[in-house]
Image 1 (cartoon, protein in one colour):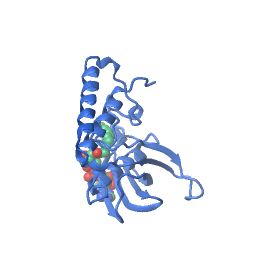
Image 2 (cartoon, rainbow, N blue to C red; image 1 turned 180 degrees about the vertical axis):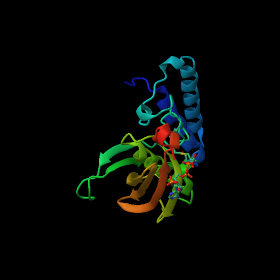
Image 3 (cartoon, rainbow, N blue to C red; image 1 turned 90 degrees about the horizontal axis):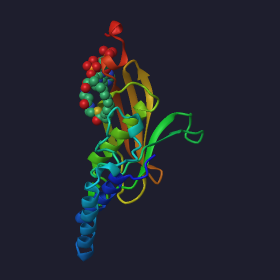
Image 4 (spheres, protein in one colour; image 1 turned 45 degrees about the vertical axis):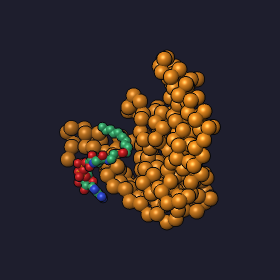
Length: 208
Ligand SMILES: CCCCCCCCCCCC(=O)SCCNC(=O)CCNC(=O)[C@H](O)C(C)(C)COP(=O)(O)OP(=O)(O)OC[C@H]1O[C@@H](n2cnc3c(N)ncnc32)[C@H](O)[C@@H]1OP(=O)(O)O
């Protein structure tokens, strides 16, 4: 159990600092905050043993430390994406397993004024669709193709939902789909193909 999530804490501080630096409120309060953060970082660096993280990707990850710039709780350039899992109920349709994250994107992710940058939209959909591709314990797979449709601006500074699910599986191929919604309105849609490397998905005797 994580009781001392220093890396996560530092990431939050650093994300706040980045937000402060890109905002227009550059004043004495910001200088004071920078000093506090610097003090926290210095103190923690003296005892790395306290570093523990609460990272939603970590238990399933093949990597000892998940540092993905798409969602890692210990990477301050990552959007604060906490991916969860659910089964869609009758209201949506069909009992499909789904990965989703409710996230608020601060100013440093801005593209057009007031809107999330399209590359960040793609990053989040790649991550959530990728999570959904692995959520049921299927072998590791890489993004082979990702197609985005930007239907409307994805707003900054308010909660948006990023969702993804498997639409069908053909051998090593997982066809994925998902979307981002803001107040229930779709702002971006994604379709993608994830493929497991041959050696991951079949014994040597049956490789094609
Ligand atoms: C150690 C692991 C840790 C894995 C740990 C997982 C980490 C999570 C990663 C997070 C997400 C990322 O950032 S992933 C990073 C970005 N993505 C990548 O770096 C992936 C780069 N691409 C690759 O490495 C490769 O293309 C693979 C492994 C994806 C696939 O290689 P391959 O197996 O040689 O591919 P290939 O034979 O050409 O195609 C496989 C089958 O798919 C079909 N196919 C190909 N494209 C399409 C298409 N657009 N639509 C339909 N079908 C298609 C082909 O006809 C073929 O069908 P058939 O002949 O079989 O019928």
